[in-house]
Amino acid sequence: MVDVDPSYPTRRPRVKICGVTRNIDARHAQSAGADLLGVVLSSGFGRSVPRASAGKVMSGTDLPRVAVLVDEAPAVAAALAAVVDASVLQLHGTEGRDTILALRDLGDWTVWKAVRARTRDDLERTVDEVGDVVDGILVEGWRKGVAGGGGARLRLGAEEVRGVLPDDVDFILAGGLTPGSVGEAVARFRPDVVDVSSGIERAPGVKSRHRVTRFVREARGTSAP
Image (cartoon, rainbow, N blue to C red):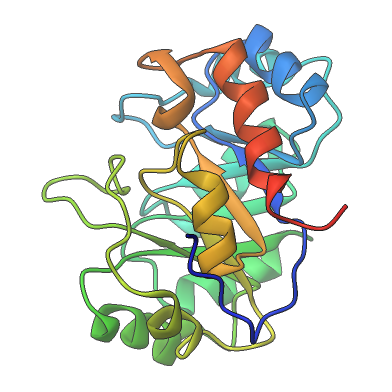
């Protein structure tokens, strides 16, 4: 039996398909019903998209775009985000309060800060530092040596997470989600957004049409229509 937290209302989470590297995958994610498309714009990562081709990857889609960035200077981050006309900046490095405030002055976008949480303390530190200047906090599992979760499932309990996150920021759940696990994760955590990358791939950076479609369906299967 799925452990559902009764203190949070049943609702339909938004679905973000992240790590998009191919235009065909971006278009399919939109047709499958995704709500957001994420592209890694910082270089040096397995699913990084070169600045010169990032716009082409998103061509023909009109979903909100999420620029995934790691420790870029504010001016550089803003320039990269502009290439894909990003609505959201998702920060996965050591970006602190000053950087986030600077980014807010450089564009009309939503800012999410990611935290790889091994313990509740990890999450509390992020909330204490930037919880009042971000629009969302992405919580994912921890894996040594990677800036993102690297597909690591979050080990904290739903009550631990919800007990720390401010009520006025979006909760983005990431890390280790798959079509087979996302329904239970939604029922337990009640996130505002579920974020998936490797869990819907048939090869690194190559999305499986079937898994994308099933993920979107399963993410909403435990929620009210």
